[in-house]
Length: 271
Image (cartoon, rainbow, N blue to C red; front, side, top):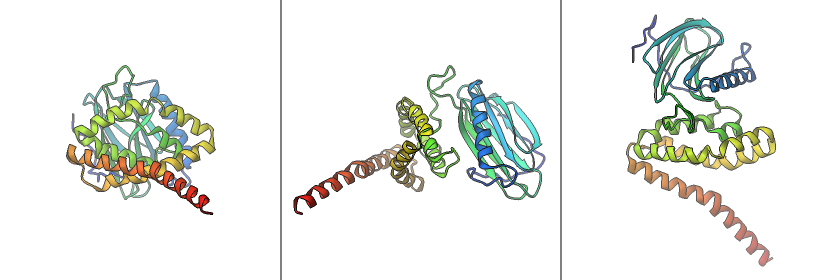
């Protein structure tokens, strides 16, 4: 892949978007723009969309899956497409041209926000390197383990929610770094995406159902956060921690309710 060249050096950051756009953008406007770009990306499955959400001037470039470099500059909110073919890898780097302001960059493909980063530091920049995403069943699918957590996104209202970001970080930074973790994600995705779109759609239609699902998945997400604080460098570690978390969740979702019911029955019996 060709090396990106910039007018100045930037500091790479790896934090997730979760900022307030003050007068420039409301969170609703940001979410609406992201949703618009998602719908647009569904019509171009072999391309990805870079969306820049900023309130100042910026410059940067994208090295696409073919190694071609696309340079862009401007201000405010803009978006553009680049080639993101089967199993391709892309690099995105952008920086602010002013000492004040904020810069958020996201990459969307096939209706999924596959990567994002932000900065509010002086002359700050963001840097992303990731795999192109093709969901199972698409004509260009190469069996990628990427994808969005549809149920959690619908429950917490945005792909920018900390809980959704936590799941994405766990997948990309932990599970996909080992063979057993990658195999698990491939199998899990085939199962998960067979029903998750229906549940996510119903969550958006029914606020009560949404709150019930959020209440149900919050303990599981909290337990998964353990994996972000342990080493998962070998297949053995992935399997060991995976089994431990499965047992923990079985205890929370099955053991605790059963224990409560048994306790209630005993209390009634002796009352």
